[in-house]
Image (cartoon, rainbow, N blue to C red):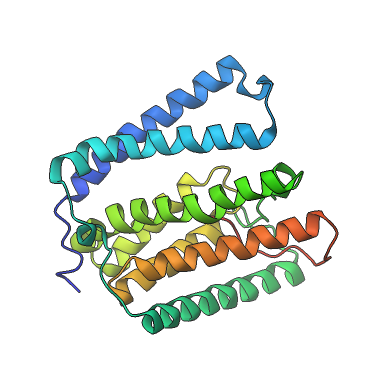
Length: 247
């Protein structure tokens, strides 16, 4: 395992890159508030797309300059190691069953006990933003189902997890990476489910020594949640909201 997680860059590189990204995110948030971005005369899905692009330029920009430009990693350095299809399926299925099982247990406790746990609320649905037409649904699929999982997995499990595990070990390296993963998903009403999801994906990468199962798992999760939200918004199906989240 040690060899796989010996990334050319260090935790210090990650912290420096993340610190710059955080400052830029705060500055952009203040700027958008000052300019009243919400008053922009554009459809909600267009605003969301613009926000998505700005967010990831800010996050990936410092990483690209400080890490990718400096170390010029190969795909294998980012975690894209070969793994068989059946091995990928096995890792994805076991990870998703674990995720559903944990959320079922916690959700049952929350529902029947009446507990209000901060950070364990249902994530706001994106369906109202994308369900107005076939074109907007396709845009939602491109952003939520394809772009977000790939970018996030390369960033968190490719760039961050590897030096974290190498420095702190698989347990605490996974915890640190999952915390960063959860903190990025603002607002934080679903912080706990996303943290749990992050830990499970980290565990999958640690077990498989590959980024591919993580990407497949992430895409499948977002496909299921996005599809459910669209079907519910169009009154095609009617079910109680689930404590599963986009990432």
